[in-house]
Length: 491
Image (cartoon, rainbow, N blue to C red; front, side):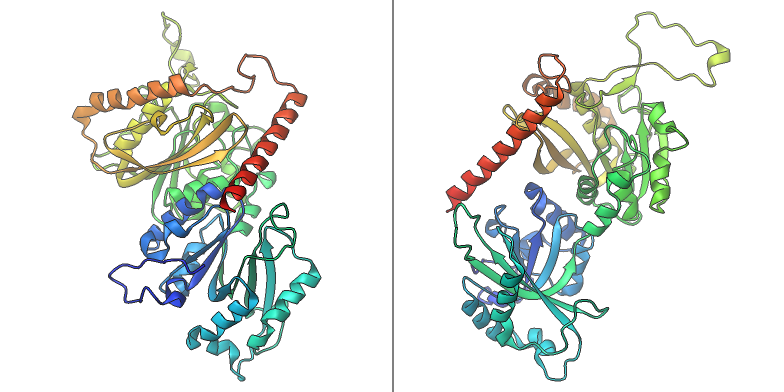
């Protein structure tokens, strides 16, 4: 599996040098496979690397969590892994092949500077070697057998399970599931030295299960970190969440060093309950608190003024679409609106009205085009009806372009798209009416072709617990069938 890791003219690596063009191996976590490459591209861009120089997209497969790639050095690999929610770890690749004999042959031919430090007699640093397989679980005896097969390379130094200066090596097997490969024999093996690990320990620490203040629509932690990476959150960046809720999307942005602002139309969620609110979550993790405003993102409700060059580096949000919570905006359904008496004005909370998704989306994209700096990103979640979805329903804007669009499968009928848009042109306020008219064209497609069932079902009847269990079971079965079909096709 000598993949063609294409290189740019700025690099002097030979295209025939399989050790250099595939020097590193990225091992992804086996979840949200649709997001693997999109998150990686964003992180590479932030690290100052061109994705086309680092890996060959045509060699990447969503059916296996391994991706051979190139980094200038270990520091760049560590920089990328230090932010990734989906990278399990990155290894410096010593050998690979369809059999262990081939792996040992590749190891013997690997550059000496890569191995010398660990094979010399004077090497005294401790090391350990772990083995695992993608597609099946290795027993303790099988892991020991794999280590014995690699033993001929004769690593020096003491073997330790834990040590502050521990060097870790991995034996990785790519194995087809039992229904296709009852013998469990791997069809590809990798061996290398651990360089960097992802941040799943941080994600686990910030899981919603341990959070002080939650709402019905708090975004799960892993997805929040993914969105922060898509937004390129970092030190000194200014980021806005216009549907902030409990602040779950701003937590990873703040963790990465951004200055964050949030807005919400619901004063109750901003004020919190029982002396707990969104600020409680930031205090829990020792993070800087964001500035919060009560407002919505409609033309009437958005009170943010920005200079012509824009104000925010990114806007991240999970807008309410009426599945778990409905969107609201400033205004009233009444034809005659009475003025607020003077004595009630100080504590008065203005009325709100329903904010339909086909109105919300064009407002969101147009405001993003106005408020973002050049190159700034809008990252949002869009629930869609799986059967009727097409890319045509996504809101378009003359000043914005879609740079990423991945599916997060939820149920048999509903999925959600993680959409990333980037500002490519300056916003001309004199063309605002034209911009909104153009954006609304696509919003009408969203209205006509994206009917979502909502929490009470498509016919308005409330779903029972048994109905929900049956839907979840059916969804799991559909996922299993789709995976089997893909594996059958690949085989």
